[in-house]
Length: 114
Length: 114
Image (cartoon, rainbow over all chains, first blue to last red):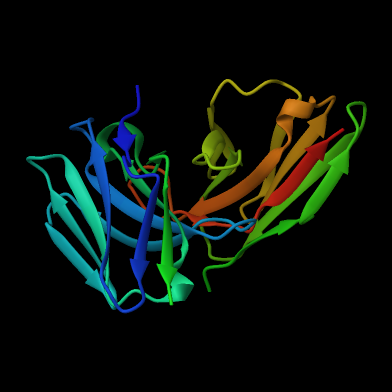
């Protein structure tokens, strides 16, 4: 049972444009969501998070939107830069039942073309 | 400082060898994690330590043996591994386990079992 889904295995955008990465979840107990970026042969790097009491969180070029009713979140990167090319993982946790234990999606490979 | 360090960076071992992976963090985090990651897949949780005590073991085979000597160090002892255990092994830490906090990952150890 895949509780966190990233349905797009890959996404390609032009430099300077917006990148939108999507994530859906099924477990209604999830109340904290995170995005990680991963380069090949490196560990995931934490990017941005959002609590279920919010619907938006912004940090520089990165904005995460949460739609609880649709059980959907998205990461917006604007403007996209070639250095943003990496695999992006969405992750979720359920504070009541598992604290900081994370459930990851399968990842989306973002390629930003110069 | 959000650095988690892991040694060695690469490890090649035979199926009869005994080796150890090491992880260190100096962020005062009280939860530490071992993950296994195969190519193009999300990290899979193996073990979680909270306040130096084993909190979660995700039914990992006994050929993997974790150890937490103190609050800053986490080891993973390896013995009689199989070729299918070849993967990137990631260590992570977070402020605590009971509430959702961001996990910070190390760069990983690329393990090859021959």
